[in-house]
Structure formats: C-alpha cells, structure tokens
Amino acid sequence: EAGVVQSPRYKIIEKKQPVAFWCNPISGHNTLYWYLQNLGQGPELLIRYENEEAVDDSQLPKDRFSAERLKGVDSTLKIQPAELGDSAVYLCASSNQGAAFNEQFFGPGTRLTVL
Amino acid sequence: QKEVEQNSGPLSVPEGAIASLNCTYSDRGSQSFFWYRQYSGKSPELIMFIYSNGDKEDGRFTAQLNKASQYVSLLIRDSQPSDSATYLCAASSGNTGKLIFGQGTTLQVKP
Image (cartoon, rainbow over all chains, first blue to last red; front, side):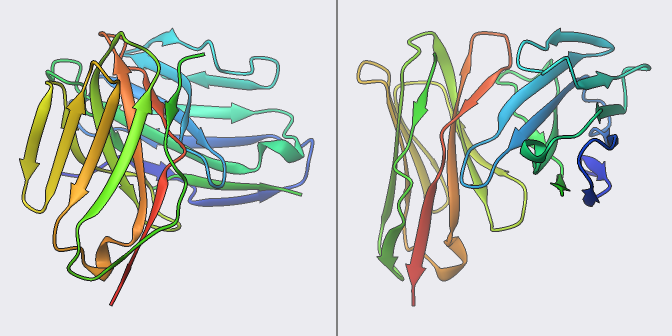
C-alpha cells in the first residue's frame, strides 16, 4: 500500500514569492492534515480536512496561507506571499476516520527555504 | 494552552541498554497517546499508541500510560544504534483527531 505522497520534496524561493505544496493521502483515508515543523520542534497542526470540509483551520494564518481539498482526496497548501519565517518543513498526514484511534501517517514532507 | 512536554535530551544510552523516554501532558481530556520516531531529515513514523492505563508491549517497545499523573513513557529494550533518532510524543483529545506534539527527545545509542 502506497503511503502519503508529497511534492515537491524541497523548495527554495525568495521572500514575497508564492509557493504551493501538494499532498495525496493514503488510499481510503478520508481525513487529511497539514502540519508545520520547525527545526527542533514537534509538528504543529495547520489545518485538518474531513473529506472536502476543513473542520479545523484555527491555526492556519489565513492572511497568507490557504488550502483546498476539492474532491476529498488530494490537497494543496499555498503560501502567498512567503516570508522568511515560513522556512520550515510542511508535513501532510492522513488517517482513516473509521479507525478506532485515529492513527495518523505522515508523508515525507516538503522542506521550504525562503531567502 | 494544551501542552505536551518532553525533555529534548540528548539521552545517551549504551547499546543493549534500556532507553526510557518520558512525556507529560496538560489536557486531562486527552484520550490516546502516540509515539513517533523521526530520523534526521525524515518524517515522523508511528511506533505505538496507547489509550488505557498500564503497559502496552510491541516487540522491543513498551508504552506506559498513567492518566492520574498525566504521564506517558516509552521504553526501548536492547537498544540498537539504529534506534538513534528523535522520539515524538503526541496526545489526542476526544474525537477531534487533533494531535498535540511534544518537542521530541533525541536518543543516542552508542555502540
């Protein structure tokens, strides 16, 4: 079974430029998460989707960040414009809402560097 | 602010020893707890989860939960150099699915 797929794996941009990350969850997983991980810290939730619906976006900086999951499968996270402080690893995870304990499985992440 | 606290380490143990990783959480509503292993430059990998007080064993790994003390631990028996990584503890509240992660503990297993 394929795991969570993310692209690109690495991205280097200049500040004020836009950037987008793509995630395809594990087949059959209806819940999708975007996390941000800074160096030396644990992941922090940005947004959670159940199917197409964003059910928790309280931690998403909505002035510059946006996300979508139009068909309830893959998802895109966008930053526009990027700032220096956005340099981090952006992780996508998925889980099966029907699972008893909501185990989340992570993709390889996208390492963003903003210059 | 709901928090999960871990000692960042590094925790250094000799090969073959037992490594003990600890985690405390502040939200008494947390119902299930997860341990992830993260190698440098890689993404977190789920090792175990626990939801009942007591111990849960899986191979060389044992997770322990004490809800009264709001304490979770992970024991790694017969530690191997390949166990050297950062171990992340996470707590999940109710049915929201939201995981709150600690900052992780770096484990070094020395040959």
